[in-house]
Image (cartoon, rainbow, N blue to C red):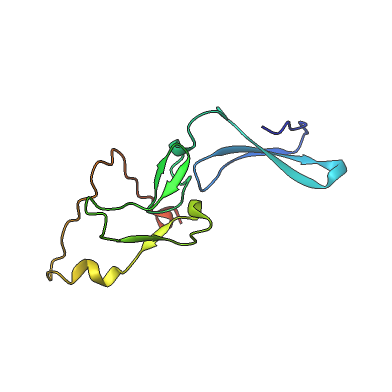
Length: 122
């Protein structure tokens, strides 16, 4: 973790990924410097948006959820080179073509699957 020189000008911010950070103004560098509050050695997957939306986080690695039938692809990475940016629906229309009412999809043995509606806080 970065060592921050404390100044009179600082604030605390809850970031969109769930991290709590303190920002200090460094006068001689004319910039805000942030440092994370809390345990920097805790599991990164404990943060709600560590890997973005629709993503499975395990041991700090980000992947799109797959079904118990691995040939079914419902999600794809927004950017395969940057998996922490999140996933998106591979083909939202195909979710509802089977019946007019839609269907449930078995995603296997996931013990935690969070959805965060960013527009709910806006």
